[in-house]
Image 1 (cartoon, rainbow, N blue to C red):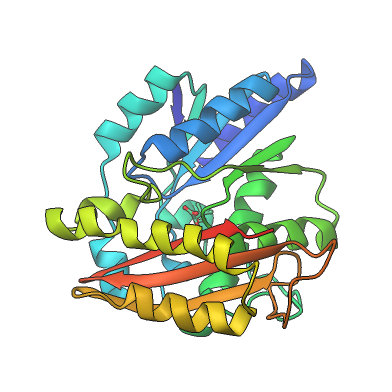
Image 2: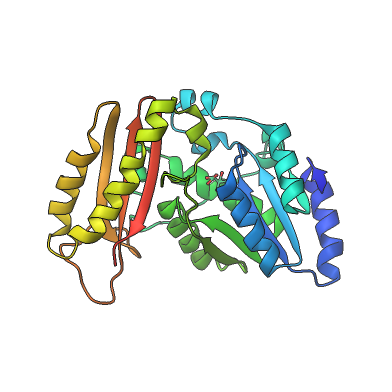
Length: 281
Ligand code: PAF
């Protein structure tokens, strides 16, 4: 695996590969890699000739300094995992490479309320930061495929929208959520969970599964109310549980044919904020 820290070096290297018609798959990450990330690399390997992964803890998407400061960083382990899984190129830029002084990287795009609900309501500015860094990375790597996990469902929807609206010639590939043995969705933040909480955090997955049953006989609002109660166990504080249209991310009043619904949750487990989601139909 080759490691690049400078945008200019990476561009020169990738240009040579593109001239030889290599298809490039790209997996952007913030490091602290786990099996969920590795599944994205494997999927990209299956579909393309060459996999580029980036590790950059993007400051512009953190709305709380404490969250940025405590975000897990495990660069040595990440490098080893990536080489083992067959990643070809790792891009590990510093902030001055991604946001060089004088370069305007802000995205001027109306996300049509996709960014105002759920995560957007609780983490103001978060998605502007995500869109900004993903666009910048896409400009540098110019990949054929962008591989992202369904765990961050709202992020995935917003990036898909951005790619469409800006006419970016990259295919977005949505990859399934990878779960720990008990069902907890894999996340870099899980390592910060105290052992007992990590075990009991399965309540989020169980509640999502229950919502799948409840949708047969209850309205979305009734499900949300019931789920919030189920999630409020000692040590846990649900921030939201929403049943939304999977395309618009807006609330719906009932299950309708041809309108897939997804349930999305954010829950504090002690000091750690966890998110998860599941298609209900
Ligand atoms: O999902 C993440 O890890 C981040 O939001 C991403 C897409 C790498 C952008 O920083």
